[in-house]
Length: 389
Image (cartoon, rainbow, N blue to C red):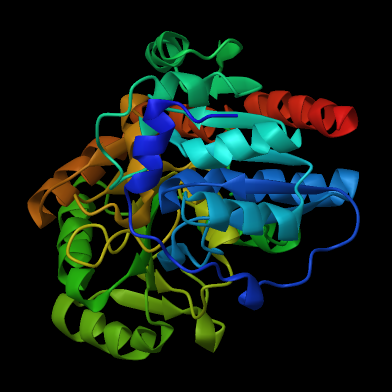
């Protein structure tokens, strides 16, 4: 069958890369679903889907995406590379996250009878770096898709305009469950010790942000003298020198978990000794500041962790890998963005009002849990597609 002009021109673009079949792992036995995301952020929802498929259906998954996200690299969108990849992995279904269209892959999948599904669909676009004039290419490729689950109505309209037949605007898939566990007995005991004291958590705070957190706590103590700060350094080894500095410079009473000390009535700061108990701290603190987002490399903890446990969120202008999540939380008024240490103190003082913290926490929980129904829809469609192959 002769290729269209658009496909011939497209195949001439892009740098050909040698297939890496010799480096691939053996294909596992049984059904296999290939999950692909072009961006690290787009891959976050795929982990939950992969876990569900393995646990509930015994279906193996192959996840491809950017190398900086630790994923297997997808094949270059060229005929030889795509054919080699599909021949090795022989997926029963292909799921594409985001909006990237890989025409060569889609045409070859259609030829082999591999159904393709799009999730978390933004407006469709060709593979980055493969721009050009390709008559009819995008429409022909999009028409091969079995189903598109779009992020919103605007994205759904773009997919329909591009040629997709089955499109639903459903929202974003659920990401990996962020509700970290904790020992209920430990939580109850600590809650009893605190006796309804106002509490806020500064999570994974790098040394560069310690001064901002301390200044915010100092300002907030003027509004609520019984306020307790649970300060979890990004480097747990900072706990001891930080405690000594707080006691010497601020005159605060500091309790250290490493010494089995409990926060007494006069304790101003409580220092955890590991990164393994965030599930406990999020449950105790109605307000959480996410360290790394103000003066660090970006947020060091997933904002869905406090959100899933009903803690209102404060964060700086550096989201790290969680830009999309912060955007959703901000749109729902579940997170407060700050740009400086002074802004952090102001936001903390505002959220210390129980009614405001409760509203933000409720909105955060809703954002953290609103993708579950979408994931169920995707799973149902995937199971149908696998059953049909």
